[in-house]
Image 1 (cartoon, rainbow, N blue to C red):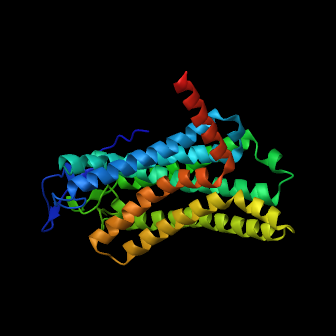
Image 2 (image 1 turned 90 degrees about the vertical axis):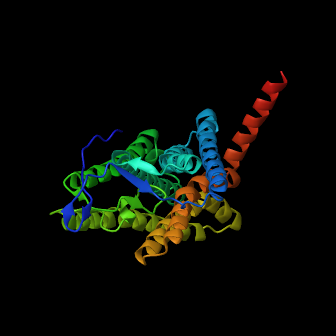
Length: 327
């Protein structure tokens, strides 16, 4: 999706408009030349591993008929979002580490921010859809096949994307009517205007802040409460299973998703809690890196290590590949 817009951006000094800013400077990790090669290799490795892991999971789900179930359909979509998510932020950071060029045009900065918001919200929506899937599988097993058919799964994934894109469009409707008054040099790793102190000014800025805050609370807290309620019901139903083997089997079907959800929401809450207390820039950057790479890296590992179906599919694929190479 392409966002084409013109934004009035002026740098204000002494109460007067100065030359319009056409570029921002993302300070990143600073100017320490001794750390740049190490950071470049670290983030390049993280990016390659995250993309390779999630791409492998998508390919396994598509190639193996045994994984053509609602749960793995959502897993494949989540991995696709993770690939897009890390590709929105890390390549620009890696490029700045290798070239030393920290400049980014305003339009590109806003586009990066928009896609970052879209993929983050799509991830939240997909995690909620996966939670509903696990709730139906454990709490209503006899009706699960009828309730979670292919059409319903497609509608749930589409709803996650519609929610994410609609949120960004609503935000942009307000942003287009504002003036950028923030600093030219931003001490961040990527374009996250939510972490900049009063980046915009204009007659409707306060209104935009309040509406965005209320909208975010209603949607994101609503999704979180839905997820929390679903897992309370899931745990209650698992504890009612008489045999320990049955309880262990039921819990194993949702344990991977539960860990991913916990990591996601703990990361989000920690990042925003740290941001609220006005931390040191380096602490904010560490938390941003944690949020950006932790879930994309952990998601495929959790589903590969904790799900026998994925392990068997991966083993079968490796044996097929090995047999093909020996021909």
